Length: 262
Image (cartoon, rainbow, N blue to C red; front, side, top):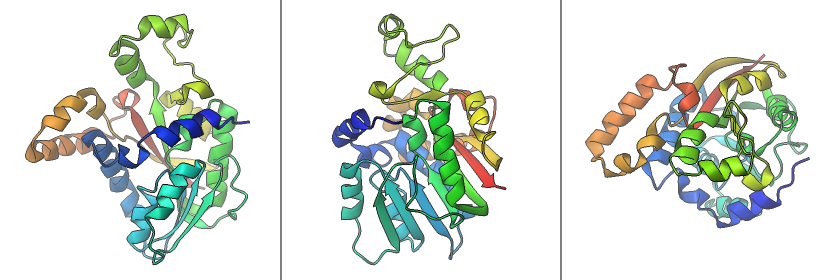
């Protein structure tokens, strides 16, 4: 099963709090996720976030008045999440693992967010276990939103863009068909669209949409930061117009799979 030491050490030092707020690539990802999440929310809905990080979604949704349950693996992240709460929010918080949500009952949540755990699970078995747990706690007809890190963006931007090809090949971290190979010490696991479809086939869900959460934004991140607000709004308009284009999904950094429990 999962060895979490590398992950916990990483998030103890990483600015997860600022990732979705303090740069425009993160803002694109957050705004895209909310664009698809918000139409699923009703006044009386119950939301679970598994892998809640420092609470960018969970705390925001709780402060908007929703009934939220947040589960986070890393104690440091959970401490930050809890520090944002003033006691008026309808939110329960747990330290826990996406692979075992035994503290949560079956068929309770209208929407379940799984926006981080798949980044750090390295086998189909673990990914399927996490997805099964998210589906288990979701009501029939409810929605599960699952985020993934995508393979091709990593090959293009990191392997070639950061001039890491020789290092990566010496470490045997690429297959002959350019699929990234990673393990817990590498922190992140990359997938292709066919990997996502294989995982989904193991659970009782149907896909609503598969979208690019940040699309080409990270490819031009330096330009995004230099844009004036009007131009950035135009970029968002372009991104939203193209983020469902299936011919582009594989090249996004982060994908968002929107599923319905059947």
